[in-house]
Length: 206
Length: 206
DNA sequence: ACCTGAACACCGTTCAAGT
DNA sequence: ACCTGAACACCGTTCAAGT
Image 1: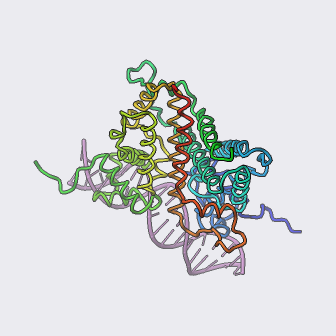
Image 2 (image 1 turned 180 degrees about the vertical axis):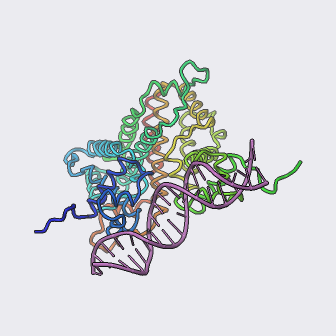
Image 3 (image 1 turned 30 degrees about the horizontal axis):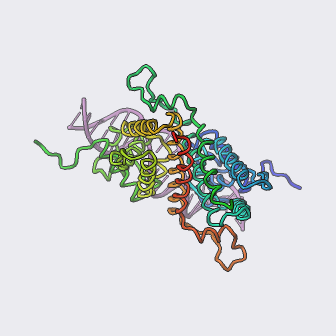
């Protein structure tokens, strides 16, 4: 049993390391060469496991999806509790990796796990009285809202370059700024999620 | 009146040309050097008007926002009609520039026009009986859903690399694929928009 | 057969040298 | 003072040369 001095490279390990690197230095500073160095292999080693950077980013998206741990979602509960938990899990996972949100948001995750999770959700909602096509549409709406939300939050959070908001004494202080001050930057997520779920509930069996 | 042989460079003209170039060759093929060439000036001319590529992309986002033409929205109608039209305008504008959606989605638009439009919307909704903070939250929800939607659509549309969906005869043909076949790729937008607006209506004066 | 890194064809951005 | 493009410090990716 000859042990290599460094961990054996696998697609999963490379993708996980790439995600860590993106978390650390940001997406725009990330490079294939730095990943090679981080792995301790020659800069081109990654190309033996991924066709190109796009394929590697697909791997990062799959890693994020795995982090959702969909297995532990409340599959025994109602469709609404499941949808709520799924929404919160997805949002929390994305917000835990602010630099990687754009990577996740710009590609569909087509791993077996992701397809399986989607299938189970449609099945559960169908059993709850939704037409399959309606269930799919509902899931798409939720996913798009969550991704749009996570993207907006992280983009603002990471781009704290020069906050242009005028001080309260300024005469240009508007209704917009006033409203913004009285609302935290993300507490509308629950509002939007509940709004969608409340309305979707009426499309089901009841 | 000495006319230059080429159009005078302005920030707006450069940003509009950059958007055209992104539309044509895609965001990942776009470069500052190609933009310089496209403008007919030396490759570095753009740097006299924009600090760097990020600032130029901010300009592209502002150009897209201008294309919304918020002035012609139904400001005299109900908040709901206004919100609906705004949502459709924003979606249509983004879908008209599939290669530029990621640019718009990854930065806040802070132009005077954008801030003014936001302010007017909050004011109109406040007059309709919403608390300003609630109105702001509602607008954020809508914006995030629309952006998430446009991003999902264009990403799938542009990335038609290898569609992995199995044929109907295949035994792996799942409920998911079946539901996907019976639904077009974007008809859930109206469902999600109406779902949000229906619920939000209950937060107002009525 | 597998691994390596030199090399190619690009980038964004700076800045010295021109006018 | 303004304009230009050479030059710097990188990229992603290929592929000839090694083992």
